[in-house]
Image (cartoon, rainbow, N blue to C red; front, top):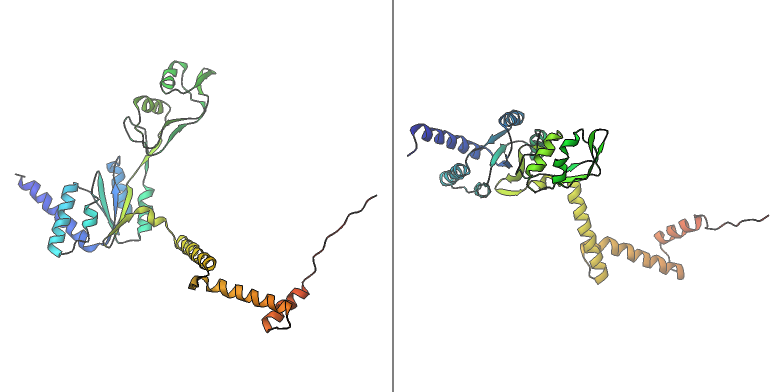
Amino acid sequence: MPSATALKAKQLYNDKMQKLLESHDKAFLVHADNVGSKQFMDIRTALRPESCILMGKNTMMRKCMRDYAERTGSNVWDVMAEQLVGNVGIVFTTGELVDVRAKIAEHVVPAPARMNAVAPLDVIIPAGPTGMEPSQTGFFQVLNIATKINKGSIEILSEVVVVREGEKVTSSAATLLAKMGFTPFFYGLETKMVYDKGNMYDVAVLDISDADISAMFGNGLANVAALSLAANYPTVAAVPHSLVNGYKNILALTLVTDYTFPLAEKAMAAAAAAPAGGGGGGGGG
């Protein structure tokens, strides 16, 4: 049975989370792998007072959300509870989601490539001198990196990818990168998903701007209009095009008949006033 101290700590945690669940309807699900305590402190400070980071055991956070649902009769946070897997936490916020995510992204720190760490990006060593002594060529040979000795130093002949994104860093790669002074990785709180009033969606949705939505809507509207015209099926999207095409047909008719109308007269007057096209010739000598 848990001690009285442990039970009190759990109760205090539950009380804190209940208040956050009641007072917020927006949050981020964040991954916290490789984030140090000093980095956490800096992020917490930067996000105050409009945001609060809550970390804890996933089972404890899910229990708090179940208690909230039982107490209030609202299951709006159930979608978040389903995503609590791995080393994750919740950033509750009352601020603008885009701005809060930007603040979180500012606090990243460089880190060395540790053995067995999963690479978040491709690690590339450029061609050129390394500053390492010839006696250390063995590290490059293990990784099949072509080198030569130039002026008493190892020189890499061509750019090489030491580890690719998603792969685990090998012992040889970690040692070599450390010897060369590379800190290729950057770690911080990684925003994964957004909670917004009972809905969960990928954080990439925040990158969609009003201009993107307008462009997608315009492309869809153009496709509907093109299909309508090709099928000779009238739709609201095709009305402007149908009117223009109808006007063109009537205007063409006035050119071969005596029938005319004000807009046709303006068009013919403008055509008559336009300079005639022509070409030039050359001379010889």
